[in-house]
Structures are given as C-alpha cells and as structure tokens.
Amino acid sequence: MPVLQIYDKLLQFPLFQGMSRDDLEIVAGHTRFGFLKIASGRPIVKKGDACVHLYFLINGTVRVKTYADDYGYSVEEQISAPYIVQLEGIFGYHQRYTHDFIAVSDVNFITIDKEELVRLSEDFLVFRLNILNSFATQVQKHIHQTWLRQPLTLRERVIRFLVQHCVYPAGHKQFNILMNRLADELNDSRLNISHELNLMQHDGLISLSRGKINIPQLERLLSVRP
Image 1 (cartoon, rainbow, N blue to C red):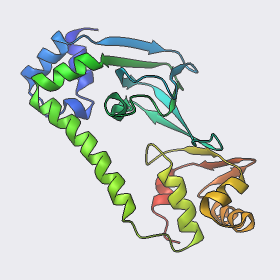
Image 2 (cartoon, helix red, strand yellow; image 1 turned 90 degrees about the vertical axis):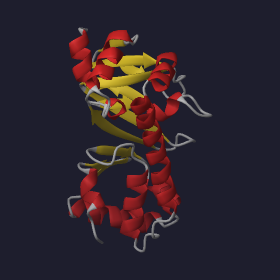
Image 3 (tube, one colour; image 1 turned 45 degrees about the horizontal axis):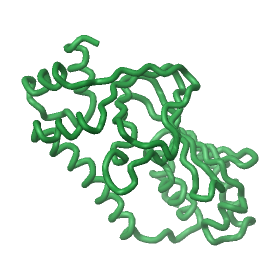
C-alpha cells in the first residue's frame, strides 16, 4: 500500500490522532505494517488466541461473538470500520483475545506487531499518550459501573444486563440465551422474565425467537425510561 494511502488510513484511528503531519509521514514510511484481506464468513481471530498483533479494520464489517465463562450463553454483534480489534489484549496479564471475530463482508486490515507498537510508543509521545488515554478510559468506565444506581424495576435490570454484555454500545445485537438462564442471571422467575421480554417486544425494543433475543438498535434501550 502506498505511503500516502497508509497515512490517510491511520488518521481514522484515535491512536494516531493529534500526531503532527511530519510524525505521521515517518510512521507511515518506516513502520513494518502488515496487510491482511479476509473473505466474508472467514474467522479473523478466536477467543483464546494469543494477542501479538493489533488489527486495524480499515474497511468492511466484522461480527463479534462473546461467550459466558461456562458457554451457557453468548452475544453476537456487528462492528464496522474503522475499528481496532481488542487493543486492551496486547498488554497486561491476559494477552489473549476474549471474543471471536468473523468477517461479515470482505474485510481489510492493517496490522502492527507488538514490537513495532512498543517502538512507536517510545518514539512518539502523542502515540504513547493516546494508548494510555484509551486504557485509562476503559478503567474509568469500569469503575463507574460499580457506582451506578441499582435498577429499580425488572425492565431496568433486563436492560442493564443486555447493555453491560455488549462490546460496542450501539447497533444490532443478538443474545443467544435461554429464558431459564436469563432468569438465573437476574435472580427472578422465568415467568416474570418472559412477561417483561414480551412487553419489550410489544414496545418494539426487541424481537424474540426460540433461545434468542434480537435487539435492532441497542441505543434505543439506552434511552428507555421504564
């Protein structure tokens, strides 16, 4: 890929924003980038794979599938470019992917291995600060969740559960979960859960099928006031 085209692609991602034009030209011209094209329907990375590269999605759409620890339920969602595949997995105690990523359309990635990422962090202050800001923001959001007011109604509890189990806070989601399991997760009866989900379906917030909860737009749930 020509240097100028790499330069334009990098500007889509927050890790490179705020860097000077001269620095970006150096990055584009002197960094060992990989280029990857994956056909629709093919896996990109799987849960448990070692995270030794950063994948920058520059075009197309991926499906992200996340599993409960016991594989008793899962969540599927779609995310379109530009998107970085699990930046948080490249460092820390558990340097492995925690989701499955599958190509929905033909997709293209720019990849950077961990050694190059460390070198960029050492050579460019803005790049280093952008990484730190990304990690700090994730930690702050996680801490904030602990102090949110507890849901007062069953609908609020259902919505809290659905929202907190998504990677990206917008768009279409599909929960593959049985009613009994959702009742256990929310510490309520299956009958009450079924009744509330059917009310939410009547309100156009979700659609139900056997073992599945489809959410056309997660942001609509975020705006609900029961």
